Length: 524
Image (cartoon, rainbow, N blue to C red):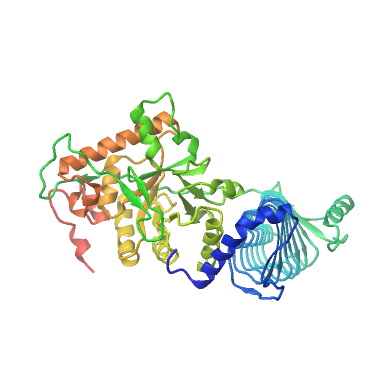
């Protein structure tokens, strides 16, 4: 990646050098060291982030210094020891590694942990153990707010004081506290430990501090009522926007149409050519594979069209990275052409935390593949700023973000932000729709300055997806021939018309028949 900060470059360099040595060191039962010279002299690290993602079984690593965010994330075995501090998301997505931080760890330590052990010996920040599903998080010293928030399994043990709202939103697991504990939030109950529990816990802790008889346990209060939430989805679609010619005459019905869109069209990034300007979002890449039951033409539609997949990707696909896919992230990133980070599924991340996540993900994937971000429409300006700063090739705004903004009203919102933050950069704006899009929709989006869209499929079955892609190509080509252009790159706002007053009022497009935007769009 060009123009990245020195700390990111240093971090990626460390991962690149360590990766080929891990299996050999594991076979030899050797410890790999970070923060020492070859002669053994200490050279403590300072801020390196995203180090050592996806550690395999048998790997043993020791690091010295103050490390950044997303260190030792997504590991599947072995051990990792930090002689110093760690920033946020230490051991996130841990799936079997034994991690020890000998000093302080920042926020979200053990985030979304599945298996393994994370030990922190001088206290942890806020949200430690957030969303963890299994494993053990051991903290010696005080823990910050919302300890174990949203956890569904696993055990947290704290030898120290705990701040406000421990266990908030938890649906399973246990939090054991040997120290001062505030009144638990609604849905969480506090109780004493039984003698049997204390013996079992202390046996598992082995050489760590024993849990005394007066420690308390927080767990789910089954008798509490959990309020349900109603989320407003986006309304309408793009059918009230028409496509009209400018000064061109219609093309012949047999004229070829260029529908190819490029993702990652910049120096230092491996460009992906999309036969259609769409990225289907599917659970498994298996539904995008060719089938003997399909015609050659339909198989060709599937064979060349990349998709965003949550599991079993093909080499041409992009991996969907969310809090729900962390458990299998190592396999998911092994052989893909790009990856998509759904920031809405993660806690709010600072720039340093985004860098750490990106370094960790790139440490598990092929070099130079394009990155795509997903974020709610209501955060579009932040997303576009982030995309430029962190070198995302495409920023997809989630239209169905719970705010209820109509699809047609989202066009000027995204367009204004893209003009302010993406113009003149390598990052592009796009949309993510929960509705299956069609050829007309894609033409409208491209004309609005969003060259690539992502959406769910009408039916997630192989034949239905192939037919849907075939229909998109035909419909998109027919619209372009009708308005007299031979490539999707020639589409612009001049080709768009609002077909009713409400659409013109919300979108700022020229009202059909009136042939100009409504007057309020000219006011300051």
